[in-house]
Amino acid sequence: MAGFVACSMPRLAASSARGRQTQIRNQPPFIAATINIIQHNNMKRRTIIISFIVLAVLVGIYVILSYLRSFSGPVSSDITEHILTDRPEKFVIKIDKNAKFPDHMDLKMSGKINGVGILSFGWDDLANYQKDTIVDNFDVNYKGDWYSDICTIKYEPISATKGELTIDYTIFSLGRK
Image (cartoon, rainbow, N blue to C red; front, side, top):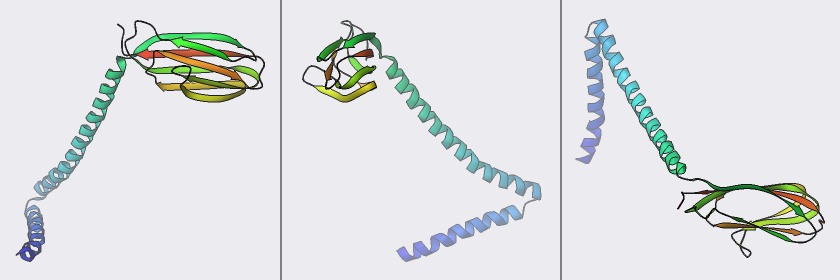
């Protein structure tokens, strides 16, 4: 029985397609042309509808993500300049006390030293999130998630005896208390 169904299905499909062709051929030319245009437009219409649905979904995702991101705003922002010597230094950035939940940070540390040093930052004295070896003119950037109320930046000279450090930061939060 299964073999019979499998064999007869293509014949039915082929005969119905031939039947449509016969119907179109038996019509006056302007009606046959209209039927062809309608059949062709159905395919175009489906493609256009699917394209609009995909576009609407993408726009919706963008709007939702933009809406959620709009709740986060800068709450702590500053640019500080520091003189570096041959001694280790520690700088602490604290978020505004009225901020609810810090969620990300933009941090740019730039400057120049007369040798080699190590620049690191993290949540506290013990936890380094990122550690970079710096030489001469340097530029260290971080843009990403940050959930701590503070950021500790440490400078450790290796062969450097003097230099300058500029810290430019913005910490974003999901609102204020």
